Length: 153
Image (tube, rainbow, N blue to C red):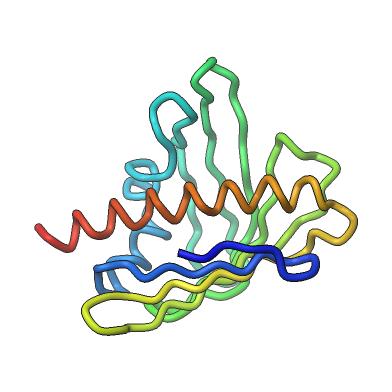
């Protein structure tokens, strides 16, 4: 796994032992997203609402380990199953942050998928960018564990 800052963007990649269709579905299916995005003792996501088409809106709620509620929302920019996915990202916990963009590229490699992410739009928001770097490390770990287990079934 690699997650790092590149100028005002975050670039990340991970190889997951599951086919691209499995990974894409885990990133776009409400029940699957709720199953893997989050961890006990940190936060859990729930109530995913997804209109999976370019221009379609998406949102989810999350509850922290202390019971604090949060939301994140956006709209889809690109939906190309199982190769590419892009959307805007607007978290309630950083209302001053302009909408950023998350672009995924999924490529079949060996027995799995190379997932590459470019998260852009952090100009002037270095602290937020650094926090999102740490967030992507956790998200990639959760996604990898979920998809790998699913592919073994």
